[in-house]
Amino acid sequence: MSQSKASGSGEFVEARHPASDQVSTAGAQLLETEQVRWLSIYEQMLKIRIFEEHVNQLYTSAKMPGLAHLYIGEEAIAVGVCSALRRDDYITSTHRGHGHCLAKGASVDRMFAELLGKEAGYCRGKGGSMHIADQETGNLGANAIVGGSAGIATGAAMSSKMRGSDEVTVCFFGDGALGQGVLYEVMNMASLWKLPVIYVCENNQYNEYTHNSETTAGEMSARAKAFGIPTEEVDGQDVRAGHLSR
Image (cartoon, helix red, strand yellow):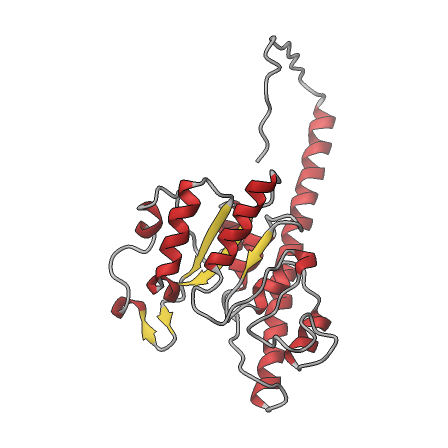
């Protein structure tokens, strides 16, 4: 979002009506730019889906060590949010984090190398599926602990504020993390200290095998509202909603 500031000593603004051919040309260019942008976003979603389908094949054929938690069906969330970020903005991820990593700019080749335990992987094959990190793209790491990245994300946002820089940190977590106390501790800190952090709850309605109606009381977004944090609920299947909410 851009904001213009007045000089303080008054301004003179001349508003002119451009010629009709200029309007049509500008409109066509804008439309073309928008089409290119949304096509790129769609391609990102498709890349994540195809990547995860290949991961599933590797995992079910026992060619991949460890576990695999697929991001299939949630691609619009990661791509919608990350497409609104700069490369130097930060994210933290979850045990279901392949989509977040790719949406933030990770290489498919290095991702596969990491999942297969190869030296060429982002963590030299030591992190595996649930612990991928890439500082070059601002990915501070996936975390196998439910809610485990909340403190890391909030700390990164605090660092940005202390350094006087303008990065934004996005903390992805699932609805199961709403049962973890650390999330409320850091939300309190983030609100109190006005930290540049966005908490993104990916609500797939299940805490592993249990529907969240059996584990989570009340309105989910009310938890953030209690700390004075502005909240917005969007359709996780609509990539535009996730992008524009940023």
